Amino acid sequence: MRRALLFVAVALFIALVGLALARPWIAPADVPAIDIVSTRFLPPLTIDGYGVVHIFGTDRLGRDVWGRLLDGARVSLVVGALATIVAVTIGTLVGAVAGIATGPVSAALLALTDFVLALPRVVLLLLLAALWQPSATLVIVVLGLTGWMPIARLVYTETIAQLGRPYTEAARALGGRRRWILRRHVIPHALTPVVAASALGFGNAVTLEAGLSFLGLGVQPPAASWGTLIASGRDTVVNAPWVGVVPGVALALVVTLSVLLGDALTDRKVA
Image 1 (cartoon, rainbow, N blue to C red):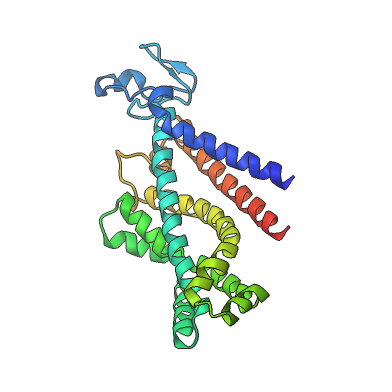
Image 2: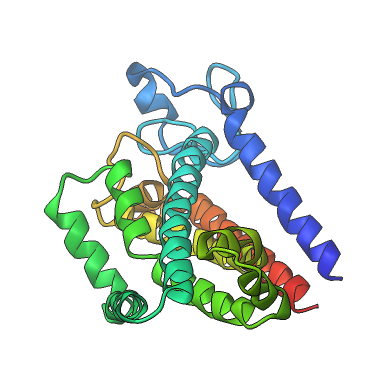
């Protein structure tokens, strides 16, 4: 069952990434501005005057929602992935060094981790995003710098556990240096729980990016992200609900897949 769940989650993720990459060939291009009047707010599965089928309808500017959804997937998935990589890199380094170091170095790193972890992340995100010009790069940096603490705690715990194992004690008795023990024994054994936590963190990063973009503090229009697409549909819930519902469903699907993938990897680690 765990393998089947893992396979399904990975397959759906690959399919979603493939759809985003194939956007120029599977979704119509945005219509010229002169056609806004005749093509705006077309319902799903409507054929416009040019014979183009709009699977999920069009928005207020006559743009195909399916194409915009895939454009948003490119931005949201890349931002979520890069932010997760930044957080995992920082968290792994801090946790590993705190676990293998002794004395004030370890205490300082753990105190820093606890201090940042105690800060309300959403408020910190809004503050940092409001201080600089909103952009995708800023979102990646902000999410990465505010999301490494759980990874650091996880790697620290795993490092302490691995240092007590017989093979690491034997390596130290034979004169193995800390860096070598960390690289050879500790980090490889910590990869599986880190990957599982990264899958969960990815879904969280995509959600936070969508939230910042929805508030106007992330990716800026006319660039598409799922947050900006949802924001563009908040005023058309009654007469054109598909504009905001479609990217909202896509966001919920990605978060669900990340949770399923994280749970499957966690169960595999436990097993």
